[in-house]
Length: 285
Image 1 (cartoon, helix red, strand yellow):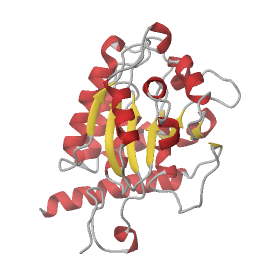
Image 2: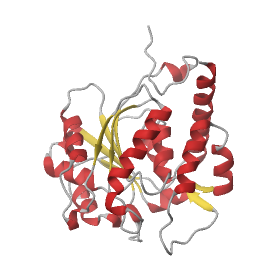
Image 3: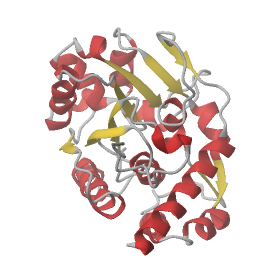
Image 4: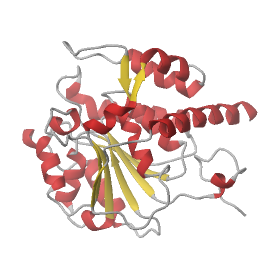
């Protein structure tokens, strides 16, 4: 008997027969840029097993940032209930403060440590597309996390440019990169390649119920005062899919990898197809 992962929508076809290759902890500032929620839906509809979801602080530039981690966890919980109600990842909130402002150990960091210690045949990947506060705190709570997990992070810049995820908590980023944790990084130059016309994004997401829920997050976002706005958004938080469920089978990876070119056609095409298949499955019930 074949066991179908909750994110796999149909038993037909060779892709459907592949079980999860890894277990995931997905960490993000869910109350910030809504592309994080788009990425979470994509992960939930994909093959790898989402074991935990943790929320991190949002930058003080966002309204309500003092409770961004708590609000973010609620947004993540609502999305999980809508996309994969039979999937029950562990949920935990992170510190509302950066390391420099007294942040540190939290339910989120302790949950990362707990999953790092678990005896499981699947390797553990921490996916983070926000500030690295929770990951740094977990390494401080238990440095052995560096030997039991790997990190796929969206953030930083190879040229030293200003970049939101790093600059929201630069001390956390420094601590993580000074550790022995294996890291795959999608820096600013990589996620700028995921530009999506807002008109196209609205039209594409409007085709499905889950897509419309995701688009609502874009329309309800309180834009920070003075932030430049145009007709383009970036879906950079989805890039870790290229290192997890959409990754080609490979041998052992290098200890540190920096991605400078990405396959946005694969990323966006897969996301839209999975949203459509999810809709078809729901209608057939």
